[in-house]
Length: 81
Image 1 (cartoon, rainbow, N blue to C red):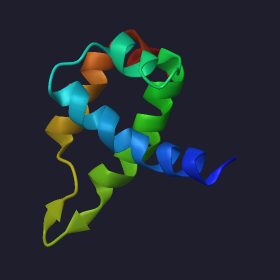
Image 2: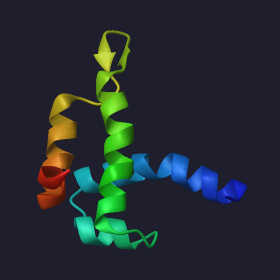
Image 3: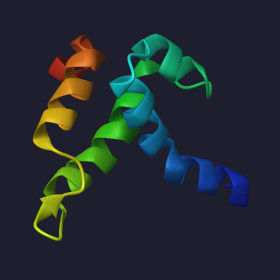
Image 4: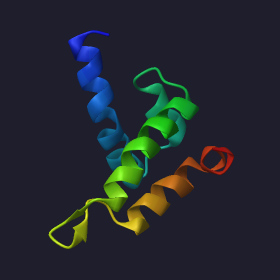
């Protein structure tokens, strides 16, 4: 994998999280980088589980509410996986 590919893969979940919270459709989020909905969800979830459990200064990196909101937005994929 190229250096650019590795960089994009590393930061993609943060972008997915942000745009899903802002109201983007899951299909559009997945399609922008050419991913399937399943790949987008799996990449986001792998990152988000760690961030939800990471405590910095007595605060989680992302809140459980944020995690749940994005998971709900993914809908059926969140239930299947």
